[in-house]
Amino acid sequence: MAKFINFCVFLSLLTLAPLCFSMENNGGPLYPSFYDHSCPRLQEIVWSVVANAVAKEPRMAASLLRLHFHDCFVKGCDASVLLDSSGTIVSEKRSNPNRNSARGFEVIDAIKAAVEKECPGTVSCADILTLAARDSTLLAGGPNWVVPLGRRDSIDASLSGSNNNIPAPNNTFQTILTKFKLKGLDIVDLVALSGAHTIGDSRCTSFRQRLYNQSGNGQPDNTLNQAYAAQLRTRCPQSGGDQNLFVLDFVTPAKFDNNYYKNILAFKGLLNSDQVLLTQNAEAAKLVKLYADNIEIFFQHFANSMVKMGNITPKTGSSGEIRKICRRVNH
Image (cartoon, rainbow, N blue to C red; front, side, top):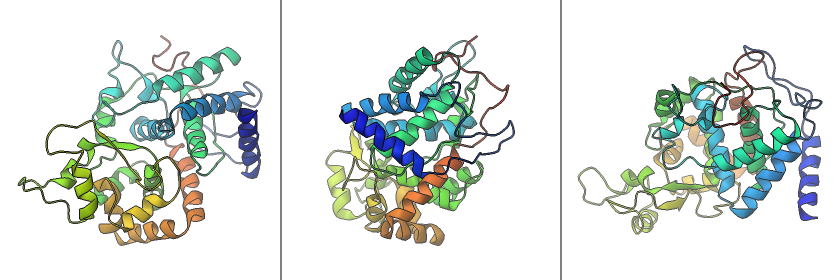
């Protein structure tokens, strides 16, 4: 009964969002009703599997959302991040941003298996990944949005693209903004989408440089609250403990809200890439303050930016393929 009620809430939220739009791209339009006739239960199936996974492990919501980011920033939203190494394919899972940290692949496998049983050879892994990201956000208490659909799957991957195109935790603000602009995203998208760090964890190795300077005298980054830095150092030593996990938002770590921005204003952004939103660009700093003050505007901007990101060079029409198994190409 609880699952039924949750799905009814999900459906009712969908009815509040506009259904009559499409996103244009070079291969044709993406539109929300793409599978209405070919796989009408698609969104119900995706929601059910994601809801079960997040109920078992709340962290999975952040993991699935992150997979979508790391997919779209490489070769567009084409599910290339899901491919294992085989033949001429070198998996993006081996890249620095993904190695030992990208997760949620088994959940996508489970969704794909269920969808294939319902409507074989119809729904792309890229669309499944996009829907899973939206559902993860919603299940964590975040905003809802209508997902334009109709993507197809890539038949190759790009290890170099994964290494070079995904913003890194220690990048400067300008480097991060450049990576966003190369994908057709702007500064509002950057600050809003960074709000995904309101849920999930990060490894010690991703922010250690903020705790210990190059000379090794143990002084923290001067844009990091010193009491917070001291707390972090207890489990993130100068050497060792690379995989130790820390919540990105220590106030409400499993809830999708705007405390992430409030933490940044208190100089308690965990990653350098979080804190630079306040310290290295005046326009970004204004957005941080806006989102910290107004969760409704943050939710609106985040939803809009997720739709925009989901439209980064998707494959449509006859491009790519519809993979039968998300981890490998069909041929």
